[in-house]
Length: 360
Figure 1: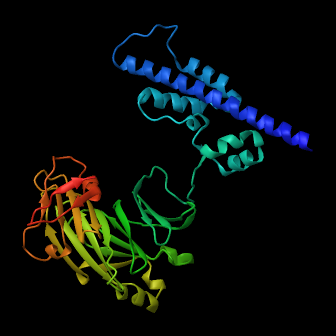
Figure 2 (figure 1 turned 180 degrees about the horizontal axis):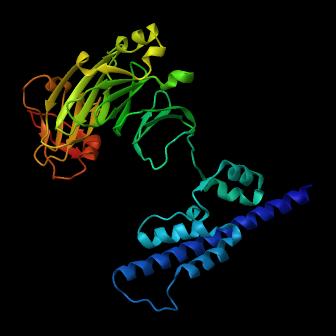
Figure 3 (figure 1 turned 90 degrees about the horizontal axis):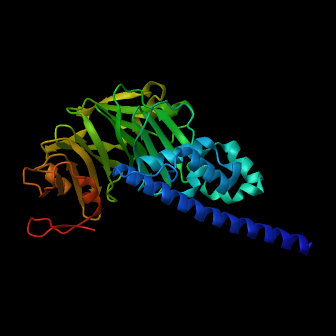
């Protein structure tokens, strides 16, 4: 018995050593191919016998890893290498990123493939999802260990920490989804289309999953949304919205706007439309161009709105300034800069009405 165990351990150690050797050879192959592609972009000539085309690359990969590699996976890797020689490359890409659940189970049963399991990635398939759709917004809810994803064509999906679908619904709106967030007090999901605000009770069961409230009309096209999380607010959430008119809007939603009304007649409230004029709201024009991103920063007790506006590209201020006529604190950046990154990563100190921003 001990002899068999020793043979098995020796065999595993030998396989590991051979695989490390193959990885070193693969790294040298990638470096050589990337260097050739860089030279070709610079207009430098490479001798034909020294040039690494796809056929040579595929033969070298098969010689290193054996017949386990698939032609289509190697072709995708080679195409990526040609398009961007400086992009980070991972050896596991050569075996394909995606695999079906049947392939994962088969690999678990095959001891020879155990070494590749750590790099396999599983494709999450959502039943009923639309084709040719893109994810527009992803929001993590740390306190619930959930992830919200909204697609451009209206699919709202809730995942758990293991990326398993908990629930989903499709917003049947003619406009595209532009953003989403979580209402921490009302325990619901808010999403925005170009002309409406969607409030969805994701905890509903059965056919009630399709129940959501639509708040409209809006004066301008909504481009982004975020929720203001304040611990002292009960049964009420404030929603910040940015639009194509340069306005920052604040909508206040209460529990009685949804929960109590829904309890009276459930069936009649499917996809109910609510008038936006019945909600408490304020807005202020802070930019002369589209508001692309908006974020509430609890640590600073203020919000940040970002725009393509070259004069007022980034505004940081308290929520109270949306309701008065006092000048807001501004931070100008070059037109087209990714001001949202600066807003999130900035360490802001307010002194004498000025905001020196230090990007970490």
